[in-house]
Length: 226
Image 1 (cartoon, rainbow, N blue to C red):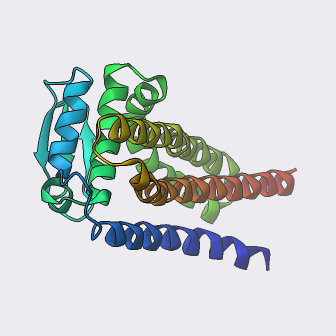
Image 2 (tube, helix red, strand yellow; image 1 turned 180 degrees about the horizontal axis):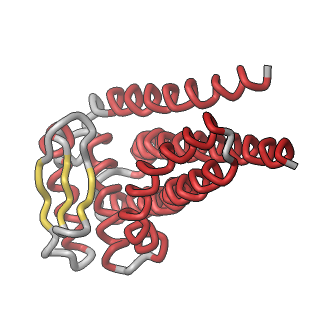
């Protein structure tokens, strides 16, 4: 029963989070923002208001492909958000600009996450090799090495949470103060940002659970060896 609950969590929770963000986004992408501003215009206004005239606003490809690139100092918005005049588009654009503002202010968690990227990429790819060797050969030391490598990836997922929540908080402050949305539209914009945040929460929860499961497995191997 415990294992059934575990697998239900790691499978159902991420799927639920993805469905939630897509349905919420689609709902509010059909609701026009009262100011009639596009996502690209919203991003540009907030950037300029915060002294970030050098940061470019570019159109990306794909559904919800919005992101901020700290290397090129550019905000990338998916076509619907770049050209659209919706509450969802304004909220998402403001969120990505929130990352640009974090970058400007050297926000500690963002800097830490950037530093972890190369480590997390390598460790995440390598960890399962040692984990599988450890499991199939019952070599606890190999499993431990895999767990240590996986922990770097899990740390990246956990550090992502304050980065994303802070960007959303900044987004809400900016789109209201910049006059991009009215006060009575805040609730809808916040729903979009909260739904998006749930995908990061789900990913972090699954990563932590998987790490705990492997630690328990390692502990069991150690007890067997003793």
